[in-house]
Image (cartoon, rainbow, N blue to C red; front, side):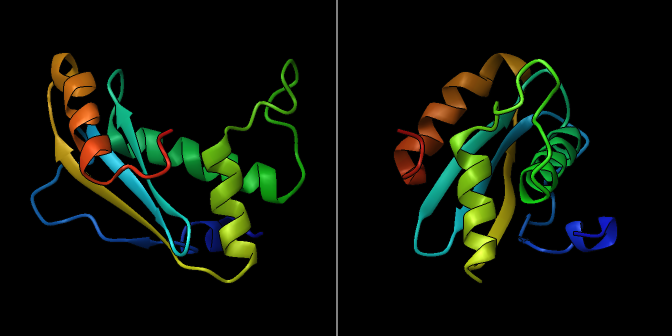
Length: 119
């Protein structure tokens, strides 16, 4: 997948007012599969999104996760790539900013509300 295509193969439905340059909670919604709740505690949501894009691209291009752990992709990486290969929609949405101290508690809340893939 060309780099520019990798930037646009999912929809971004982040609401106005969420700052991607701060820590927080975000989700991946995969058509016919469910919703995965993720966090950025030590970094910004934008940096975590960039890392996810890299992992999706590597997996789709059959590249190793890393030299020391070539098959280190997580289940969510595989689910997103599989969904796109099947032509299903994938949506990214940052859902709230919160302090690093509150990330774990807020993640548990959002998993309870809509995190069907966080099992």
